[in-house]
Length: 298
Image (cartoon, rainbow, N blue to C red; front, side, top):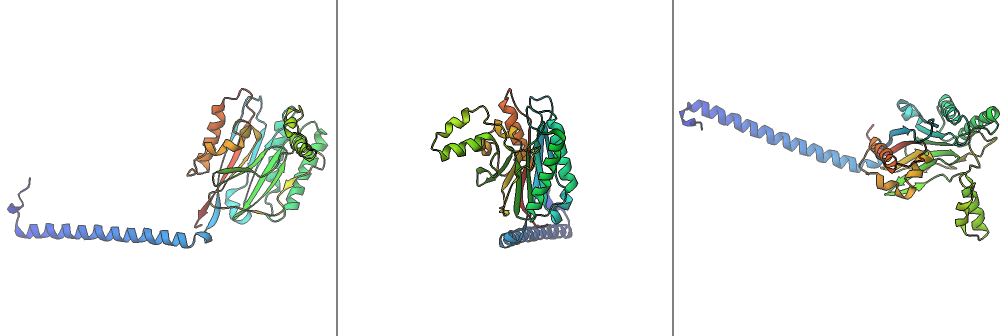
């Protein structure tokens, strides 16, 4: 213990003044910091609707039990996002046909060459995809093909384009929705069975069920597309993936593998881990691009 009574009186006064100044400075700093935090929070709440929605983007690209990686992905330049939006795509080479990896790579390379895309030109963008498909047809004459799912996000709206059975999934309010229907025989048969009053369960027993009725490589393919943009909301999650993801994690269980406070990278890691832990002996290649919509002052 120090005996301050031994200090000169002027030293004690100086120490007291210094302690008082320190206490005043600390209290003043705390008040200013608290005021700033309150003001920032109030401003954010008042102007939240005016803040821009931006895309937080991540991906994974994994080979399953196949000999080759037949999935290919595309992400547009993020430094061009403010002017042209964000365009992402996933193409999956068709199993059972040769050159699946060549075709899927050709698809994403062609999308890269045609960038940028006009957001409101859905018909023109679909025509680009049809042209790519026709060139694959001219080269392979139905001997090779691939699926394609492509999403274009601009501000808080999105358009999508789809061929085949890959996935465009929107997760909102803890619920996953498949935005594009699969262009395969089972979808066609279920529709016909339902119209004819036949039990649709029989459609799943058909050996052709997973066969595609349209794909990249088909002549004059029919590209599914949005007729008008879809509105996106804060914390919406988009998953653009090959069917290798949903073969192991069904649509209704996707949300069980996601923590909604995660960023896009965290969600991608969780989904990749979820597929791996299934240890599917016939695991297809599995790739996905994850987009999480967040608010930003920028």
